[in-house]
Image 1 (spheres, rainbow, N blue to C red):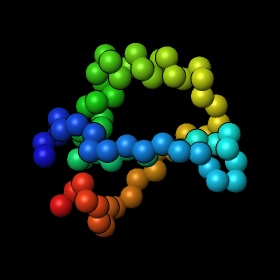
Image 2: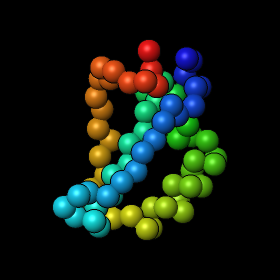
Image 3: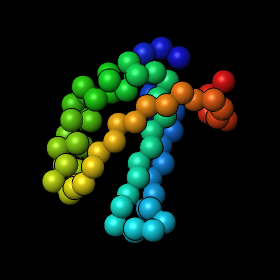
Length: 72
């Protein structure tokens, strides 16, 4: 996949012990693909709409994928 490939998958859910805590996970073909997506006008508009609704800590954690049915 090239740097302009779309998001390969995403999930969202509540923390088991704190239902007011939400988690969102996205899997991208590369960091460059994610960075490119954030510059799109549609993404900027969605972020601007969602930001006032959000509070708390934002992650941005990175990890090395070791296995997934979505990625060879």
